[in-house]
Image 1: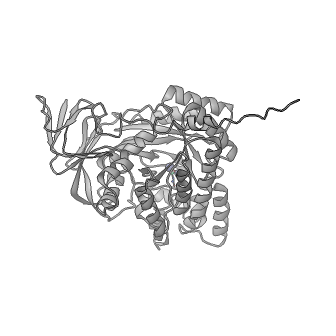
Image 2: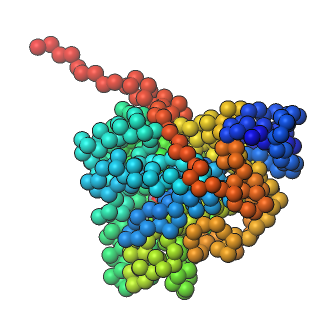
Image 3: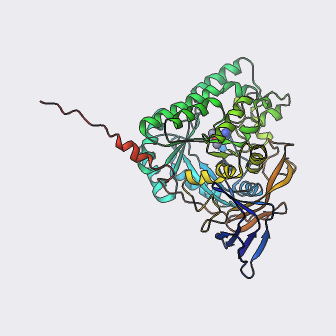
Amino acid sequence: MSILIRGGTVVTTDGEFRHDVLVNDETIAAVGPDLEAPSGARVIDAGGAYVMPGGIDPHTHMELPFMGTVASEDFFTGTSAAAAGGTTMCIDFAIPGPQESLLEAYQTWRGWAEKAACDYSLHVAVTWWSDQVREEMKTLVRDHGVNSFKHFMAYKNAIMCDDETLVNSFKTAKDIGALCTLHAENGELVYVMQQEIFDKGITGPEGHPLSRPPAVEGEAANRAIRIAQVLGVPIYIVHTSCADSLEAVTRARHEGQRVFAECLAQHLVIDDSVYRNPDWNKAAHYVMSPPFRAKEHQDALWKGLQAGMLQTTATDHCCFCTDQKRAGVDDFRKIPNGTGGVEDRMGVLWHHGVRTGRLTPSEYVAITSTNCAKIFNIFPKKGVIMPGADADIVIWDPNKTRTISVDTHHQNIDFNIYEGMEITGNAAITLSRGLVVWEDDQLKTVRGRGKYVNRPPFAPFWASQHKRNELAEPTAVKRED
Ligand code: URQ
Ligand code: ZN
Ligand code: ZN
């Protein structure tokens, strides 16, 4: 099946081009002016629209077992909602519990993900350390296309890892060409702060941000960055939510250290006033970690994106419905942490990022798709409109307006954190490997059509790190006997 996307403006990180795009079956066959439509091809008129690589969300949690419950969005409903918003690939997380096999967890998540409608991949979490874990990391990289390992520095007594695990995992990752990613909050501090806040009689959702102030994130980000500096390993900080952690990233990057950082669309446009909502449910809906921050932190994040200190945007899509949130009705520490947003990231970032002039369309493509593809080594298969690339394409109507609402979204959750937000600029048509999966506001996703994407080690985007460090090989002093 061929599709000719005619008359649009193709956007890459290098610029905007009035080019047509020819898709043959699952891949992009040609990009250029005035392309011929092969006989029998469907021709899509993209006049007035942007033709961009489908969004890649490097951070989702479909059907995650967490805090005594299971996230309500599954891999089919979640990747379908993503497609409705212009995102054509998600990278999720296989998270073994302490003492559990990483390989078994990976196989479990692969099983769950088989129902995905769009392509996906898996980071694997390292939540404990042993020789077995080291060998399983090697096997996952060698045989299963995993090139990134997640480390939670928070969630004490659950999936939090200590410095021994961080140091050993980082060293192993260096040897096998994998990227270490970090949930950077000091879990010990959170644990103590939660108790203090609770003992003060603050049991509602407003206790959540009070127990994990920005400095708790800043400390952990800086610690991980310094450990990586000493070991000469590239790292990636997930959901950077405040100036404190961004400062640590910025200092390190200014010193030439290979540190990447991600921010969430929701942390850019929602602030901590949400936790003061007198309606318990409405406040609890926003309980996620790191929490929403005071406005000045949003400004810092936007500047971080504009300055290239933040390279990717994500959603940390982790849905818990109101009844699940109410598990913590008497104790905010028991509210399952997580918010949705996989359907709205692309629209929210275009409306608040491009339409405000903060970002150009090319910068938008970089932070919603291309940078992620390069960092996780799936470029140029993914993340670019170019011959040979997978035909993961979003035809973006910059004038299409919609009001975000639980009443109209496709996410499997009973509220929407952006409820009532009117955004201009939305996906008109989404193609997943050449199949039209969203058009005329109708989902046409196919259960199980999504494929697992292998991610090879030693991404050229950052792998040169090794050479630089090896130059500094220490030498012993030769002494006369
Ligand atoms: O921390 C994460 O990334 C997972 C557990 C989702 N929940 C959250 O509050 N961010
Ligand atoms: Zn996290
Ligand atoms: Zn997460």
